[in-house]
Image (cartoon, rainbow, N blue to C red; front, side):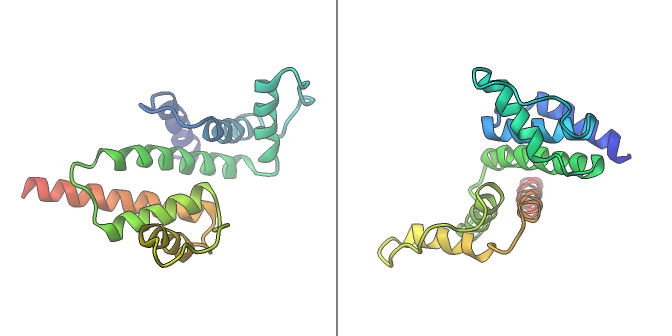
Length: 166
């Protein structure tokens, strides 16, 4: 399957997501979709009273430098990330603490970026472990973190499926 066909398949999947992504995620997907299908922004920025249209225009403008192929590829990765963020919630067995921390760190890196807070104190052990997991993947780009998150969720789903069939 070519990139364009895969992109179109994922565009259809977005319409059928069981849990609606956040407005921010929808705007990212919108901007990438427009860049992939139309190219650079061709209209002027909507006025301040058209807040929804203005937010959509801004999301499209934010990815204006991407090629069609880059926008399609980024759209596919973002859709898969959203899909797997939902799938992980449906695991019947809770992942190990180690796996949960890996998922947490990758999710935060993919959605927020590098750590922006100071390390929690030694009496906040849970928060400190989560911070450490996030800090451990700080050098990854958003796309790398999304891709690694998807891979980890797939591993957990496969492990669950194989233990269920055993």
